[in-house]
Amino acid sequence: MADPSNKPKQTLFTRTTALVWAALSVMLALKWSMDLGMLGFPDGYITPFARATSTLLGILTAACMAQGLYFSWPVCWAGR
Image 1: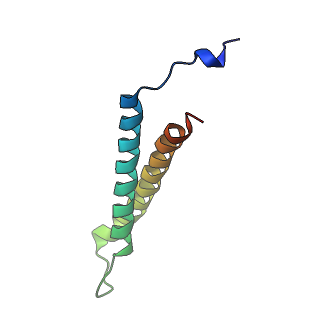
Image 2: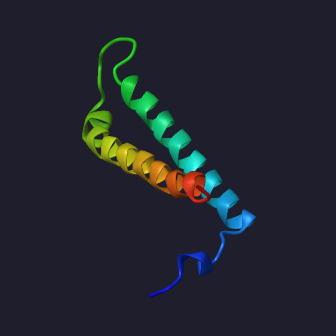
């Protein structure tokens, strides 16, 4: 069985890249969720294009948020 103390350490570049990627994913997901929240503003009319793409954009928003959380969690807690 492998000794956990011999596990290779993450470099600063790898950790920084993962945190930047996670931050960008979360910011993109928040922007898309604001776009979805503003559908139909101010007159209440939702265009056929917005109606057709809102479900897919909601799925993409959730996937982007999950990716951001997935990449940020191990990087933040790896040294503990």
